[in-house]
Length: 328
Image (cartoon, rainbow, N blue to C red; front, side):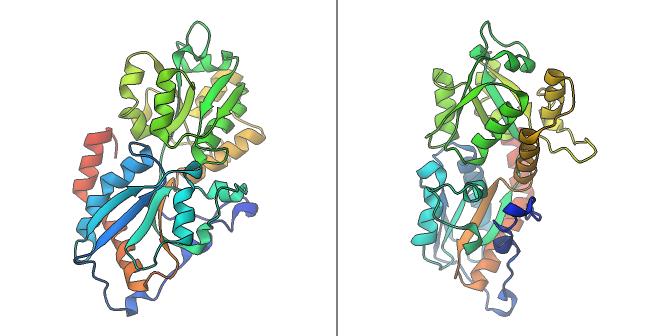
């Protein structure tokens, strides 16, 4: 679990840092006990999506590491391109330490002025979160005659891309990656979560989706193995010298910079690539984030933050994640 570093460029710097870097005087407070209480975790996407699966998988370990071992309930609240949960959180959630939001981190929606997001992330107290490796995958019949290799995506006349909204980070990663490759595409928005988009892909309603590597290895595995789908790329952040770290858990899928070079004959470049590389670096640091309402008792914040740290470091949790996903 890592706190997101200072955000670049400067126009986006104020989005989250205030909330992330906030500290409290919790060490001077009496310990907060959750004994006999219920902690509700709100998720902004439907059951079965990557964010939902991430939260449900770790919720029991959060329970184990909170003082008093409260009951932990995960509640899905979908709508507004996954922003409804944060609006509710900002406007109605009680700051008593017993309700938190843990969902896809949609700071990009705030940066782009998405009108469906009324909340502001700097007004929440940051608890913890996880990074992610993102994979773009497509239906093989996206290209007439079918795709046999990921580079065949360049022959597509128009790719239909499934997304929550025009500003969610998953859809934006798809949009920027295809734009950088010069692949014509159209965004189809309004889905409630990754599970909806995956079902739409199976129906042929959309042809392309950006998802977690873990979800690609689990939920999407049969779709890929059957030959209906194909992994197109995984995203990796490229440094100023052009170097990047290849993911050992994604060896059968090309890294985006390698795919770009194969299709375009040169290293990635251009404004779409710059934006994609920046956003990839952010999701590689923080893709799913948990927050408490501002005003939550400092001792409760301290306990929740420590529980997140301890849950993700729990050897049993790590072992279970590897067993379920094939990767930690």
